[in-house]
Length: 303
Image 1 (cartoon, rainbow, N blue to C red):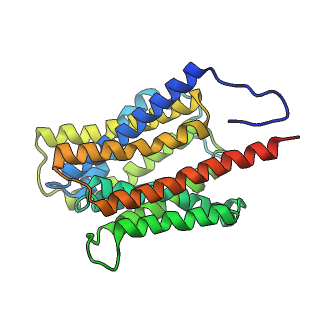
Image 2: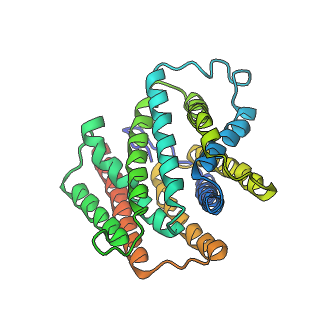
C-alpha cells in the first residue's frame, strides 16, 4: 500500500479480493506449467520443453502484444539490459526444467521460495537497499530452511536440487534487473523481449536435442507449457492492477499447495517431513520480511 503525506487512495475491498483471486490463479498456472514440464521431461529432453515454453508463449502473447497493437513496442531505452534480463530468465528456466526430471514438485518449490530472501540480500549492493539486522536475521533463517529441504551432507536429496538452487539464484538476479528496467522501459516492452530472446536462444539448440518425435499428447502439453506461462504472467499483471503488492505477496505461497496437489495426483509424490518443515521455515521468513517492510514504510510515512 502506498503511503504518503496526503490521504491514502484505498482500493475498494472488492478490487482487492479480485486481485487476490487473480494472484492465486496466476501461481496455479505456474504450478501447472512446472507439472507439465516435469511430465514431458520423462520422455523428452528438457531443452525441448524449455523451447516450447518460449515458442508457444511468444505465439500467444503476440496476439495481444505486437508492434501493430502497441506502437513502439520494440523500442527500449536499455536494450542491453533487456537482453541480459531475458537471457538470465532462459538460464533460470533451463536449470529448473533439468531439475524437475529428478525432484518432486514440492521439493523444487520449497527451494525456489528462497528467491525473495535472495532479492532482499542482493538489493543492498545492486540497488542500495541495505537490509537491517532484523531482515538479515530473517534471511539467514530462511536459508537454514533451504538447507533443511536439501540436507546437502546427508545425501538424502538428489543432486539435481543444486540445479534448483542455481535457478533460484538466477531468478533473484532476474528480479533485480527487472526492477532496474522498470524505471526505463514499459512493461509491455519488457514482456516482449522476455519471450523473443528466449526463442532466439533456444531455437538453435533444438536440432541437437530433438531425439524422440513428440506425440499428440506431448504437443498438447508443450503448447500447454507456453499457455500456462503466459496466463500466469498475465494474471499477475491483472492482480497487481487491482491490489497493492504487500496485499498480494503472501498469496504467492499458495503455489506450494498446488504443487503438492499436482505432485500427488499426477506423479504419486508425497512430500516428506523435511521438505514440509524446510518450506515452512522459508515461507515464515518470507512473510516476516513482508511484514517488516510494510511496518517500515508506515513508520517512514508518519509526519
